[in-house]
Image (cartoon, rainbow, N blue to C red; front, side):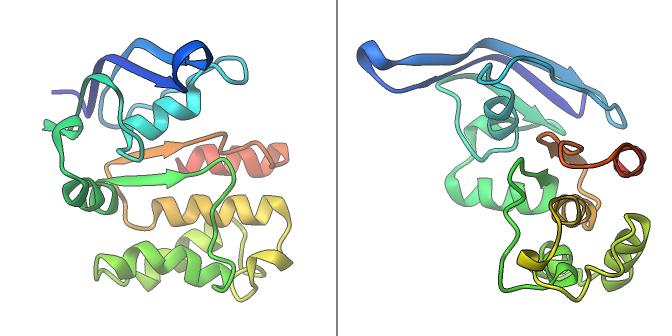
Length: 183
């Protein structure tokens, strides 16, 4: 059984003459441990596909299974639990909580599930070279530091599925390679 199996996904933004179909029968299968890259021009639906696969957004039609669970049939409450327990997200625009330090942002998902994996969070901060950013607020960090904090946050709970939207976009070559190795 694949980790992710999605078939026939359709997603349209807008209505009437302004409607734009971003996903038109999209699908993929991903095995556990597999690293998949989705390429396409700006506006082609890459982020939308990730958001639909992770349960942030809903497709109008099609099916999504993650670890055998039909994500497209979950209630809002079940989707919240699914995202919390099964998906690590790296958002294109980071979505760090501005009032939390780097370390607190990384540890937040672990605390939400009660895992409190302080050791794992600190290992990730060290792996991504973020010791200097751990105690600082996001607005005092570079874009690359913010991006690596967001990646560490996505990995802290060791979710079976990590969805990363341009995870190396703001990074130099060496930092980008460290991130890819970590993923």
